[in-house]
Amino acid sequence: MVLEDGTRHVTNADGTYQVIKFDRQVVSVSPERAFPRGGPQKGDPEMTIAELKERAAEFERQGLSSHNQIMAIHRKFAIPVACLVFGVIGLALGATNRRDGRLGSFVFGLGVIFAYYIPLTLGPALAKGHLIPPWLAVWAPNIILSAVGAAMFFWRSRAADQEFRFAIPRWLRPRSVVTRAAADRPVVVEASLGTPGLVGRLLPRPSILDRYVTAMYVRVFALCALGLLALFYISTFIDRSDKVFKGAATWSMMGAYLWYLLPQYVYFVLPMSVLLGSLVTIGVLTKNSELIVMKACGISLYRVAVPMLGAALVAGGTLFALEQTILGEWNRKADSIKAVMNGVAPATLDMLTRQWVVGSHGNIYHYNYFDPGNHALLGLSVFEFSNGMRSIARRSYAERVRYEPAPGHPDAWRAEGTWSRELTPSGDTRKFSADPIAQFTLEPPSYFGTRQPEPQFMSYSQLRTYIEQLRTSGFDVIAQQVALERKASFPFVTVIMTLLAVPFAVSAGRRGAMYGVGAGIVIAITYWVAFSVFAALGTGGVVAPTLAAWAPNLLFGAGAAYLLLTVRT
Image (cartoon, rainbow, N blue to C red; front, side, top):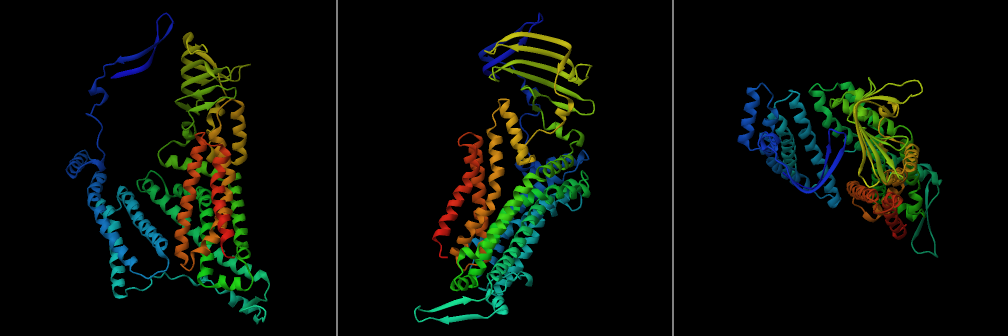
């Protein structure tokens, strides 16, 4: 092994400390000790069928389960066969005269993929729990979807070129605004000699229109929100179900985990539901010619969109309220339950994730393990700084430290197996000392026992206070500042999406609700990509944190303003 441009640290018996820098050094390493099995091992996906059979037979001889290898063998055949299954379903769904166009087909394609994903992921979990045989776990998606595809293909062959429809519940079917208006007051159509054509004028109060649009919007919004929540929960259940089937977790633990994820999922679902609700509502009004009637009666598109804009403001306020109240705390609880399901002891869950800690006086602590029961730290390193944290003044190490306060010394810790190294501003060693027993002055145990502050587990006010504490200690807070600005900018996405959806839905014409759903998915993906890219640019210092967080809203808001000013109102 050839080492280049390195540094070697040597402690001599007389207590001196040497730092030897080298440009090139050759170190002999035994390949058998470094790679005892002759190199990196293949995983099941990388193995051939013969190798998988050999490994499965070896596991069976040892009395171990070989279901992973059996599933890997069947997967090599099942995945190629899935191409034929998707082709049959694609032919059945494609042979229709739908007006939704490409985006409507895109939505149907996503539904088919998700329908294939559920048994594809749930099957191995059931096999690991010994509820179904391994071969069935792999072939179940093909068996189910091939039966559905064959039935649909047979049906389409008998009724070719007919529109493929889903039955919508009666309570979701919108009623005509003209019918609603006529039920209250008559519609008067007058002819004017000075104006060519007819001028329609609705006599009922404007609140009737607001109630009608709001009711339609709320129905679509609720349907989208419940559907998206169902997708999140189904995917999460499938991902974590193998822990329950194998006995690593209980159903009550799974229920608690899903319950504490609710605020986070609502936080994700609300912007998408607002976008889809606006797109579908305006799309349905356009397709049914109701929007034309409203315009003919002197009601502009802006006036029609007022109820949706009000709902968007309520949704944005809900997002900010979640940020300020239960979102961070419930995320922390869900994360704790997830770690317990993965086999991490709950007593040390938070401490294991916090191995780097900033002290109240500017010191930095690093440790391998914290034992909250005995108030002990293992493998502790203490870094002390000078010159405004421009250089390290001292590094102290202890194999084990235990909290033992004494009168007048409430922050005293007993350290074992210690050494300390004082450094000059240039980085050279000024003094080195090693002691079997020493006394360290550290933070109290509760300081190490709390969870490391993370933006996803903090509210806006908590994160702002934490940033001020880090800034006064001289730390770089760009990443935290970007996270803070994102917490302030994200709730406005509901208003931006509504302003963008209204003119876009009008421009889309009479292509129906499925086209609106497809357009909503594309717009949401584009916005999320822009949101993530600008956040990465802000964290890397390329753009200012405020611009990194607000740039997606500014870009999409400008696009919405252009569409609103150019669409026929």
